[in-house]
Image 1 (cartoon, rainbow, N blue to C red):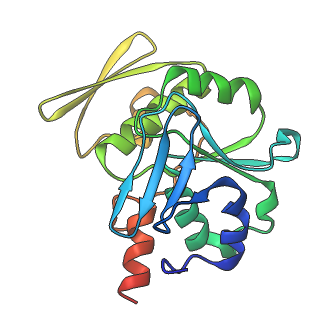
Image 2: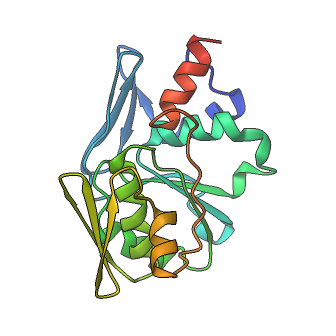
Length: 203
């Protein structure tokens, strides 16, 4: 409520978190937890995915992939008018280090679904969206950051970008390969939760 999260979004997320004694939100990834309070946000480096939505995956139409459960909640609250029926959505939070096993699980269990990437604007978010998109399409990409350069090894070739010029879209343009995973970024903020906090506390 203090964050200004839409009540419909609160109801949608409520089964997937617990509240500790201080009133902070706790999301259990199985091997680690994401912990959110107004003054802090701890995102785990998990090998698992955190899922929010119907567990009957056959009913899911759109899959939205992000770094954290709080980013998922903030994104949906800020963009709720654009969705006709949120019951058909599945959110996947990867934690801070998305891995190959996560991408394999997605490609195996969610084949044929529509994907959207909502990772943050910072470099880690852009690296995550490239690695996940490539993994989901079963065409892995290795990303290396050296000084002010980002090197992506994709389809047996190195592709070099400046840090500011690196993105999934830039990789698509340089290689001619289309991942068909739209990217939706927060405006002027590194993450969706930062945008929601700014909107709520500076309204």
